[in-house]
Image 1 (cartoon, one colour):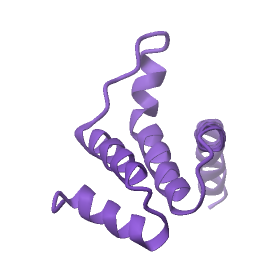
Image 2: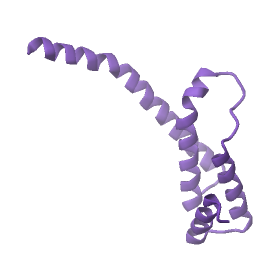
Image 3: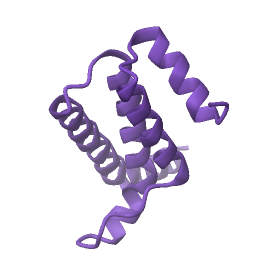
Image 4: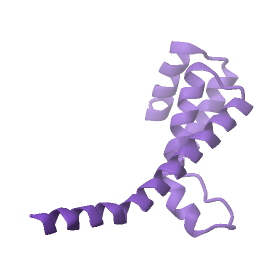
Length: 112
């Protein structure tokens, strides 16, 4: 039993550095997304939408970005392009609050 406990401790210790690195990368992405949202002066639903998109794009592209440091940014996915287009259209229409949220949902679903 004691050998099993020691083995478990060693396995956990082996994974701790990797877990800490993943947490730090996520924290950095959150900081970067917040800074970008602030620079764009986003508030309310627009900020929430942007943050969700930014963090999602960061999670999906983090491994690729780590592997391709120094290279050009990857192209936006079709969903990211659609999100960008819908955001632009909502901004042009000066939509706010629940009206913007409803528009974004319709626009992103393709029913627009």
